[in-house]
Image (cartoon, rainbow, N blue to C red):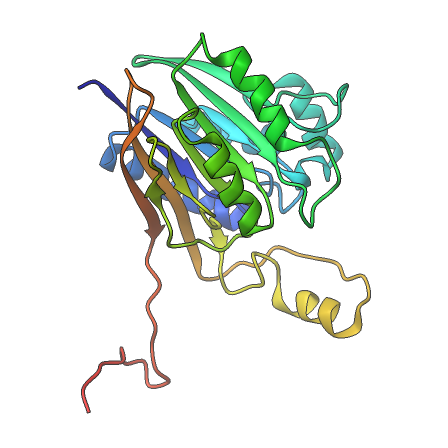
Length: 276
């Protein structure tokens, strides 16, 4: 059985997340014997999209495609980069005429791999339907590649799971991004699609989903605008590994990645036990 190994890196947040990827991605590529690497970079430029600077770093490290999301548009330089770099994606279901690519088909030693970027609408901007847009692009790609990878950038768990049922049997893998909190529900759906509701964040966890805590707290406490700044400490890398059969386009193995793992400690710095 011929297979392809795909490694996905969850939402990279600012310089701390980028530094972590620079440190550990080469080792992870080697560990998982990754043939193809995708990374969500919509927050790579400090929560404001992915500019040429961050894109070059990621591509030089071995990333093949960078996916995006609702923050892709937050910085002019990241918008310019969308026009120049076809491998840096924005969600496909933005209205017709929006610049940038929503999918990319890459050549690999194991054959073509198609990457699709979609965005949800529940608690998110009201853009085109991701389900119908998925139908459109899959009809376009069905003769081009059996290995189709989807980054579904969405807020609501229900919308992500609904999309998973909708695409099972039509794509190789679907990863959820956006909430910055890794879920523990990775599985292979009945028709062979690998799935996780949210891959999680690659960045500083001494924070509120990557941003400095004080500003985030004040936003909730006072309901007034606050300047968000990227946090710095307690960095972790979140990702997913998929082994996919190149003949059938089905996931045959998957593994959730969290590095380094979280360790819960008591106040005296001792790991808790069940001993009485």
